[in-house]
Image (cartoon, rainbow, N blue to C red; front, side, top):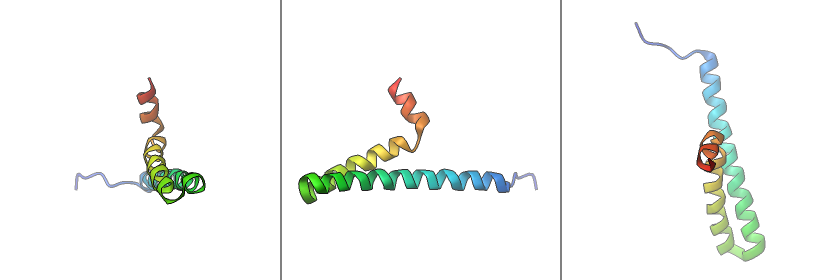
Length: 70
């Protein structure tokens, strides 16, 4: 009745945000794991994959990254 229903643009914006976050985190994790695998084997892949995961979390939210750096 008095509830605000999300519009199609609001839903699309939410979908784009989710896709952006997931893609950045997956890409950063994959890059870290690949670099670790090439340089140090399985242990390096696990370690740098985790580092990539954390970096991806920071990179997925540029405003949080900018706030952290200032």
